[in-house]
Amino acid sequence: MSDLLIVFAKNPQHTPVKTRIANHHGPQRARQIYDKLLDITFDWLRHCRADVVLYTDALPFPHPGSHVHPTRLQRGDDLGQRMRNALLECSQSHSRCVLIGVDCPYLHASIADEAFQHLHETPVVIGPSTDGGYYLIGVQSHCAPLKELFEDMPWGTSHVLDLTMRRLKDLSIKPHLLPTFSDIDTWEDWQQYLHYHALQKS
Figure (spheres, rainbow, N blue to C red):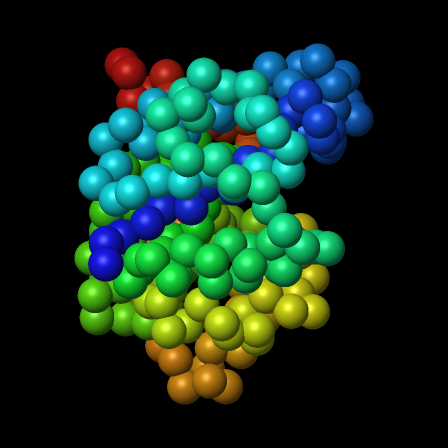
């Protein structure tokens, strides 16, 4: 049983994306930024050692980079249910599953590989984000059924990581924490990333 990277992505032809950016700069600019985040993600996925599957909310998925990966529909009434259902499904065929979104352009293949390496020894791996959530969660297959990680979670708030850590402590599970990165939720987040990217290229 091998490693599997699960990528969650909204279908931008079906669902509004980057709504906080759209509220101030318009839906077209928000879509352009989301498309760029998809470009960044599918580019580094080519270098990922694990198997990859894309979960989205509507098919067909429009990005050309998705065509090289299996694509499945998300199932569930909220984000927590959709994440748990995907992990449950994928843990039937893979020993270690890592789930990410496409909102963190700082994420790259070596970080994903690091997550899988730690999952050989640690039941749960988390990549914290600066907004109080996380950009990555990975589990050994026997942890995929854990409802505590996904039910009654205030998704989209600054309390997600703290509550997740407290629930893991109650379960006597000590997760491995990856480097902290920023998601792209606001115009300021995007400008900060562009500045970081320019510095990396210089």
